[in-house]
Image (tube, rainbow, N blue to C red; front, side, top):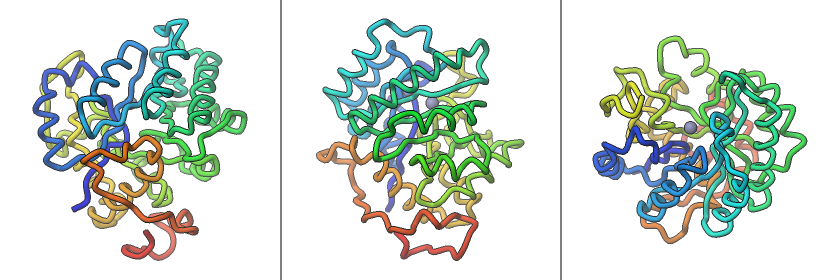
Length: 302
Ligand SMILES: [Zn+2]
């Protein structure tokens, strides 16, 4: 059986604290063999690092989210470098956000650039958040170093016409359950334009809740969240993506798993018991295959 990988969540978030024991036992039953837990500010980095020490399926990731830039200390870069030097961590969540109030684009670009420089220097995958700043991100990418493995545009809400351009810079794109909500059909359909070998899945828990009828693990309101998303909903996310791609669920799970290992290979510890998949090499022309173009190859391409 294929296992699940949650390419992006915030297991450290206070909204999940009261339910942590239940969450951990549920994700183990699926099983979720990896989750990339993204820090968002220096104040939560230590908790993320502790979780990675205690939980064998956690890949830690550290970054400054654009919503929390003003909280940063003078020493944030030094602190991030220390994690990069001492642990096998990814970089993120970082990004550009022109949806938030009082956004300072110049500051966001500067901080994102620094994160990208560090990710390239240490050759680690980096996860980028982008809201209403797609042209600005495209403008920045040719001017910054990018790690060889590429980067993740998480919960991609950009236009379909920009996918090709982001691909040329090494982008992967993750699908979250929020796109299964009413009114988000267009965003969901965009994922049909993304090549199979660049697709990932994520919960963004406790954010990006699924519509109620798909939420397999409803959690009570906590820490300002109306309905915190449960990381075990990754199963429902895969199911929803399979419906959109009109591809069998186990096939989608297998493919996103292979993509996960390709992107996050450098930060997956080899000695962890949950490492139960070992994908083969990437095929040379696989990126030409998109879910809605050409013949659908279900068993031989990967
Ligand atoms: Zn996030």
